Picture 1 (tube, rainbow, N blue to C red):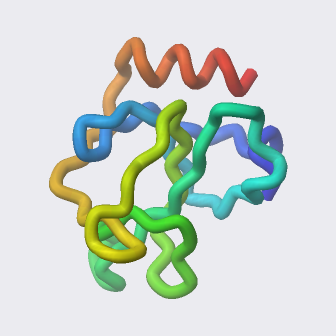
Picture 2: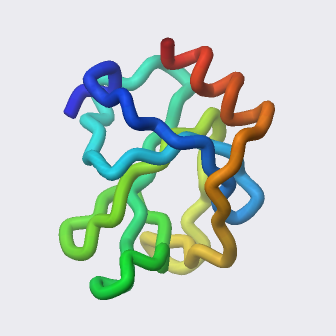
Length: 99
């Protein structure tokens, strides 16, 4: 999906990084400059967030958009240590950038 077609972005913090979450896959070529998209891989059952990846083919739980790059710490992924859906200033700024 094109990022502007999505209307359900939810503010989130994943591993202390603010961003916006959607259940949809976002086409990277449609993103504004300086916005990064990462797929979230779930556990396949409860939809728990397991890993952040550049692309998830199996157990795609959603996509997060951030204004910073997330380094992949274990090969092609970064484990999700913690995440919370919240309303915060960093996500609001990112949402304003996307509007």
